[in-house]
Amino acid sequence: MSEKTIKEVVAALKEPAKKKFVELVQACFHSPELREKQAAATAYEINTLSKAVRDNIDLPVVVKDGKVSIDTTDTEALIARTTKREHLQSIHREQNIESIFAKTATQLESVEKCSSEPVNPDLLARFIEAGQDVSDDDLQNLWAKILAGEIVKPKTCSLRTIDILKNMSKDEFDMFLKVCPFVMDDVIFSDSHLLLDKGITTATILILDECGLLIDTGLIRTVQLTGKEEKIFNTDKYILLAKRRLPSMTSFFLTVYPLTESGRKLYSLSDCNIDNTFFLAYSQFLVREHRDIEFRLHRITNIETDGSIEYDKTVNLLNTPQETC
Image (cartoon, rainbow, N blue to C red):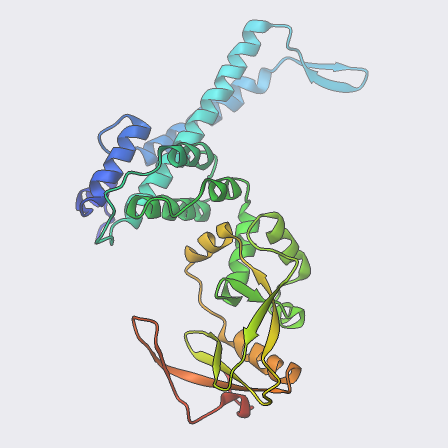
């Protein structure tokens, strides 16, 4: 089956997602439809860059007292070089933003329901300004998911998140993806040894804090205990329950690294798989740390659409040393 063109993708979109997407394209590109010139633009950019390199070989280089500089006394030549550089930058930025919009159309292919509310114009302006400098394919896919999300349901992404993503490098994005399998209920349980076993160092946490994606100080989460079992967390495979052994034990504390608003947004777009081996090891860690609490880890058999969980109550996996994920 041949690959769809952008026009075919847009034509197949369902309303009102199609109408909203086309309106965005019109607003950003002054065109009634997404322009299909990515391949031509790429070839043009290569030719233009090659010509620029050839033309600039004869830059007026000046060597004086062992220092190399460019003679800028010729104003006309300086203006010409400036214009050429700005044109090259404009071409590159146009390619980037058109590529993101093309990826956005693909993200909307499976959308059945879409709000009729328009995308916030301030957010769209900020999005265009930031996205035009994003050339990495993975990051462009992330930006496309954000724009598609705003088309489907406006106001799901903040201006702050746009600014954070604008300043995030590909390496930092990959670093965040690396911690995503250990996120549960918008936090990372912060046992440093278990995280280190998974390749998550203190430096990783500090960098992600600097990026504005999580809080590295480690906050305290209080778990209230009653006479019945309380859910601590559940993955797609396990559910961990806790019950006090003594009436005097009314609560216990967990140290966590919480995700920020922007971190939660980015996590929701990450499509990562939970690392069940980490949560199994963390459950075993809690058993060792809290002797006054009875923990039970059960295998989930079904999760309903309303979030209710069915699990095998007959086997406590914490009493099964050979349990593996």
